[in-house]
Length: 296
Ligand SMILES: NC(=O)c1ccc[n+]([C@@H]2O[C@H](COP(=O)([O-])OP(=O)(O)OC[C@H]3O[C@@H](n4cnc5c(N)ncnc54)[C@H](OP(=O)(O)O)[C@@H]3O)[C@@H](O)[C@H]2O)c1
Image 1 (cartoon, protein in one colour):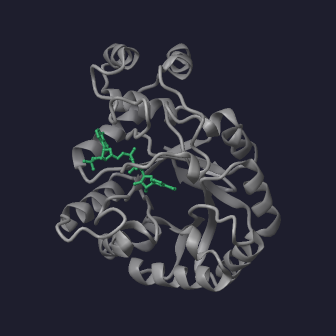
Image 2 (cartoon, rainbow, N blue to C red):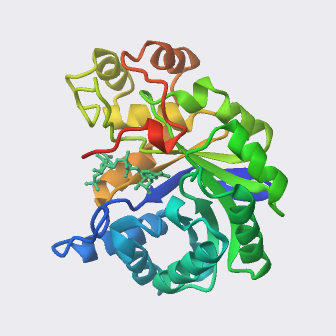
């Protein structure tokens, strides 16, 4: 499960938390305990990297994570959160980070991302705030999300530490990071590439948002051949790629177990390539947040 980048070991499966506690705003009827239990369960099973953002459920998601990890030794968890594109001026970044720390109930963030670029805010300003946060020891590593190679290079020149992770949307359908060489670039530069939304599909032309049986013949055949579920096959297609990790969300312990099972088998190189080349819906998007489709 572990790989190495920048001298650090990391796990290739991370737990996402979008839609824990709500979506853009908090859901008063959310089953908070179920989400907290899922986070604790994932950590107990070795998925220590928990991914969130200041914006999820209007900040509620970070509170749930804070609650989930409060009895767990801090060094057994790896907490990643993000500052939104509307908070990228220097003072706002510092302020956002301090608010996230408070909600997460921790003294440091393991991985702090720029969630999405804002063309109206100079990246020098944002990078300088991230450098300050490093200096203050409030964050341990820096990540970028929804970016192409040029943006990664621009930040690299301004940051006082190597970029630790790039998080872009990437799955069998959403191929921009693969086609534009972002994944190869990350690999060459020892940056962990983390694919977001590995399971859920929400694109025009995609008939089944969950790769369910009966939708894609190719996937059904592959699942039958390996005696796995369709979800496990698509997850394995990602995980088997050198330098690629993924962040999936689940509040369901059986689903978490199902994803962990993925580590116990391997697709043949030929089958990996068939999926790669022949999966019937492929789109050139996934790097920029303006080029992906959100669920309405
Ligand atoms: N950087 C960004 O801009 C960005 C954008 C979006 C998301 N993200 C991150 O990426 C994470 C993952 O993306 P996502 O949550 O949008 O999509 P996802 O992880 O691809 O899919 C989540 C959905 O799949 C279901 N699921 C999970 N495991 C399953 C399994 N084994 N079998 C069947 N269904 C399963 C979940 O339901 P259950 O809960 O019932 O299992 C949930 O409805 C997010 O949570 C977030 O942390 C980042």
